[in-house]
Image (tube, rainbow, N blue to C red):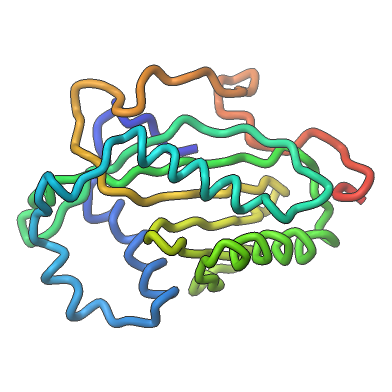
Length: 207
Protein backbone atom coordinates (compact mmCIF):
# COMPACT_ATOMS: atom_id res chain seq x y z
CA UNK A 1 0.00 0.00 0.00
CA UNK A 2 1.36 3.46 -0.84
CA UNK A 3 2.34 5.83 1.96
CA UNK A 4 -0.26 8.42 2.98
CA UNK A 5 0.45 11.73 1.29
CA UNK A 6 0.48 13.70 4.53
CA UNK A 7 3.65 11.97 5.69
CA UNK A 8 7.16 13.21 4.80
CA UNK A 9 7.73 12.84 1.08
CA UNK A 10 10.19 10.22 -0.15
CA UNK A 11 13.26 11.39 -2.10
CA UNK A 12 11.71 12.69 -5.26
CA UNK A 13 14.15 11.33 -7.81
CA UNK A 14 13.74 7.81 -6.50
CA UNK A 15 9.95 8.08 -6.60
CA UNK A 16 10.06 9.43 -10.13
CA UNK A 17 12.15 6.56 -11.49
CA UNK A 18 9.38 3.94 -11.70
CA UNK A 19 6.87 6.02 -13.72
CA UNK A 20 9.68 7.05 -16.09
CA UNK A 21 10.74 3.44 -16.64
CA UNK A 22 7.14 2.43 -17.35
CA UNK A 23 6.68 5.20 -19.91
CA UNK A 24 9.92 4.25 -21.65
CA UNK A 25 8.90 0.59 -21.74
CA UNK A 26 5.55 1.46 -23.29
CA UNK A 27 6.91 3.93 -25.84
CA UNK A 28 10.29 2.42 -26.63
CA UNK A 29 11.84 5.90 -26.31
CA UNK A 30 15.24 6.84 -24.97
CA UNK A 31 15.53 8.81 -21.76
CA UNK A 32 18.44 10.92 -23.05
CA UNK A 33 16.45 13.68 -24.73
CA UNK A 34 13.54 13.73 -22.30
CA UNK A 35 15.58 13.98 -19.09
CA UNK A 36 16.69 17.60 -19.48
CA UNK A 37 13.20 18.80 -20.37
CA UNK A 38 11.75 16.96 -17.39
CA UNK A 39 13.86 19.10 -15.01
CA UNK A 40 11.98 22.27 -15.93
CA UNK A 41 9.21 23.18 -13.43
CA UNK A 42 5.76 23.03 -14.95
CA UNK A 43 3.37 26.01 -14.92
CA UNK A 44 0.54 25.88 -12.41
CA UNK A 45 -1.94 26.20 -15.26
CA UNK A 46 -1.04 22.66 -16.36
CA UNK A 47 -1.97 21.11 -13.00
CA UNK A 48 -5.22 19.27 -12.32
CA UNK A 49 -7.24 19.29 -9.07
CA UNK A 50 -6.58 16.29 -6.80
CA UNK A 51 -10.24 15.28 -7.06
CA UNK A 52 -9.97 15.09 -10.85
CA UNK A 53 -6.82 13.00 -10.63
CA UNK A 54 -8.48 10.65 -8.14
CA UNK A 55 -11.44 10.12 -10.48
CA UNK A 56 -9.03 9.31 -13.30
CA UNK A 57 -7.19 6.79 -11.11
CA UNK A 58 -10.46 5.12 -10.17
CA UNK A 59 -11.34 4.85 -13.86
CA UNK A 60 -8.04 3.09 -14.55
CA UNK A 61 -8.65 0.64 -11.72
CA UNK A 62 -12.20 -0.05 -12.91
CA UNK A 63 -11.10 -0.44 -16.53
CA UNK A 64 -8.56 -3.02 -15.38
CA UNK A 65 -11.33 -5.30 -14.14
CA UNK A 66 -13.98 -4.43 -16.73
CA UNK A 67 -13.51 -7.69 -18.68
CA UNK A 68 -12.78 -9.93 -15.68
CA UNK A 69 -15.47 -12.58 -15.13
CA UNK A 70 -16.43 -13.87 -12.62
CA UNK A 71 -16.01 -10.62 -10.71
CA UNK A 72 -13.24 -10.33 -8.16
CA UNK A 73 -13.52 -8.89 -4.66
CA UNK A 74 -11.12 -6.11 -3.66
CA UNK A 75 -10.50 -3.03 -1.57
CA UNK A 76 -8.93 0.27 -2.61
CA UNK A 77 -6.14 1.99 -0.73
CA UNK A 78 -6.39 5.69 -0.03
CA UNK A 79 -4.73 7.76 -2.82
CA UNK A 80 -1.25 9.14 -2.32
CA UNK A 81 0.88 11.80 -3.99
CA UNK A 82 4.63 12.08 -4.56
CA UNK A 83 6.29 15.41 -5.26
CA UNK A 84 8.47 15.27 -8.36
CA UNK A 85 11.98 16.73 -8.54
CA UNK A 86 14.89 16.93 -10.93
CA UNK A 87 18.30 18.34 -11.64
CA UNK A 88 21.51 17.95 -9.69
CA UNK A 89 19.95 19.87 -6.81
CA UNK A 90 16.74 17.80 -6.90
CA UNK A 91 14.67 20.95 -7.16
CA UNK A 92 10.90 20.67 -7.10
CA UNK A 93 9.23 20.52 -10.49
CA UNK A 94 6.18 22.16 -9.00
CA UNK A 95 3.83 19.21 -9.08
CA UNK A 96 3.09 15.85 -7.50
CA UNK A 97 1.97 12.61 -9.15
CA UNK A 98 -1.12 10.91 -7.78
CA UNK A 99 -1.35 7.16 -7.23
CA UNK A 100 -3.81 4.58 -5.93
CA UNK A 101 -3.68 0.82 -5.35
CA UNK A 102 -6.40 -1.82 -5.59
CA UNK A 103 -5.87 -5.02 -3.61
CA UNK A 104 -7.63 -8.16 -4.86
CA UNK A 105 -9.09 -10.20 -1.99
CA UNK A 106 -10.37 -13.13 -4.07
CA UNK A 107 -8.00 -16.09 -4.02
CA UNK A 108 -6.67 -16.73 -7.52
CA UNK A 109 -5.01 -20.10 -8.14
CA UNK A 110 -1.65 -20.06 -9.99
CA UNK A 111 -3.27 -22.01 -12.82
CA UNK A 112 -5.59 -19.02 -13.40
CA UNK A 113 -2.92 -16.29 -13.46
CA UNK A 114 -2.64 -16.27 -17.25
CA UNK A 115 -6.44 -16.20 -17.58
CA UNK A 116 -6.69 -13.21 -15.26
CA UNK A 117 -3.92 -11.27 -16.98
CA UNK A 118 -5.50 -12.03 -20.35
CA UNK A 119 -8.85 -10.62 -19.23
CA UNK A 120 -7.18 -7.52 -17.80
CA UNK A 121 -5.34 -6.99 -21.09
CA UNK A 122 -8.62 -7.30 -23.00
CA UNK A 123 -10.18 -4.65 -20.79
CA UNK A 124 -7.29 -2.27 -21.31
CA UNK A 125 -7.19 -2.71 -25.08
CA UNK A 126 -10.95 -2.20 -25.29
CA UNK A 127 -10.40 1.24 -23.74
CA UNK A 128 -7.54 2.12 -26.08
CA UNK A 129 -4.71 1.54 -23.64
CA UNK A 130 -1.16 0.72 -24.79
CA UNK A 131 -0.16 -2.57 -23.12
CA UNK A 132 3.32 -3.92 -22.35
CA UNK A 133 5.11 -6.36 -20.08
CA UNK A 134 7.17 -4.47 -17.46
CA UNK A 135 10.86 -4.72 -18.31
CA UNK A 136 12.83 -6.98 -16.00
CA UNK A 137 9.84 -8.17 -14.00
CA UNK A 138 10.21 -11.67 -12.55
CA UNK A 139 6.61 -11.73 -11.32
CA UNK A 140 3.46 -12.25 -13.42
CA UNK A 141 2.54 -8.71 -14.40
CA UNK A 142 1.28 -6.36 -17.09
CA UNK A 143 1.50 -2.60 -17.56
CA UNK A 144 -0.47 -0.14 -19.62
CA UNK A 145 -0.82 3.53 -20.40
CA UNK A 146 -4.18 5.18 -20.97
CA UNK A 147 -4.81 7.53 -23.91
CA UNK A 148 -4.57 10.51 -21.54
CA UNK A 149 -1.16 9.46 -20.23
CA UNK A 150 -1.97 7.74 -16.94
CA UNK A 151 -0.18 4.49 -16.06
CA UNK A 152 -1.51 1.27 -14.55
CA UNK A 153 0.08 -2.05 -13.65
CA UNK A 154 -1.14 -5.38 -12.30
CA UNK A 155 1.29 -7.58 -10.39
CA UNK A 156 0.82 -11.03 -8.86
CA UNK A 157 3.17 -11.50 -5.93
CA UNK A 158 4.80 -14.59 -4.45
CA UNK A 159 2.18 -15.15 -1.75
CA UNK A 160 -0.71 -14.82 -4.18
CA UNK A 161 -1.57 -11.23 -3.36
CA UNK A 162 -2.57 -9.27 -6.44
CA UNK A 163 -2.14 -5.53 -6.70
CA UNK A 164 -3.35 -3.09 -9.35
CA UNK A 165 -1.52 0.26 -9.20
CA UNK A 166 -2.65 3.38 -11.05
CA UNK A 167 -0.64 6.60 -11.22
CA UNK A 168 -0.52 9.87 -13.10
CA UNK A 169 -1.95 13.34 -13.11
CA UNK A 170 0.06 16.41 -12.24
CA UNK A 171 -1.53 17.80 -9.10
CA UNK A 172 -0.44 20.75 -6.93
CA UNK A 173 2.16 20.12 -4.23
CA UNK A 174 0.22 20.19 -0.94
CA UNK A 175 2.22 19.65 2.24
CA UNK A 176 -0.01 20.86 5.07
CA UNK A 177 -2.90 18.42 4.57
CA UNK A 178 -3.95 15.37 2.58
CA UNK A 179 -4.78 16.61 -0.94
CA UNK A 180 -7.50 13.97 -1.30
CA UNK A 181 -9.38 14.71 1.91
CA UNK A 182 -9.78 12.65 5.06
CA UNK A 183 -8.45 9.09 4.59
CA UNK A 184 -10.94 6.28 5.09
CA UNK A 185 -9.99 3.20 7.14
CA UNK A 186 -8.55 0.21 5.28
CA UNK A 187 -8.52 -3.48 6.30
CA UNK A 188 -5.61 -4.29 8.60
CA UNK A 189 -4.12 -7.40 10.18
CA UNK A 190 -3.83 -7.98 13.92
CA UNK A 191 -0.47 -6.20 13.94
CA UNK A 192 -1.85 -3.15 12.15
CA UNK A 193 -0.39 -3.77 8.69
CA UNK A 194 -2.64 -3.44 5.60
CA UNK A 195 -4.44 -6.74 5.04
CA UNK A 196 -3.47 -7.43 1.42
CA UNK A 197 -3.58 -11.24 1.34
CA UNK A 198 -6.56 -12.77 -0.51
CA UNK A 199 -9.03 -14.60 1.71
CA UNK A 200 -12.22 -15.10 -0.34
CA UNK A 201 -12.69 -18.41 -2.16
CA UNK A 202 -14.28 -18.47 -5.60
CA UNK A 203 -15.45 -21.63 -7.41
CA UNK A 204 -13.75 -20.48 -10.61
CA UNK A 205 -10.73 -18.42 -9.62
CA UNK A 206 -9.58 -20.34 -6.57
CA UNK A 207 -9.25 -23.81 -8.14
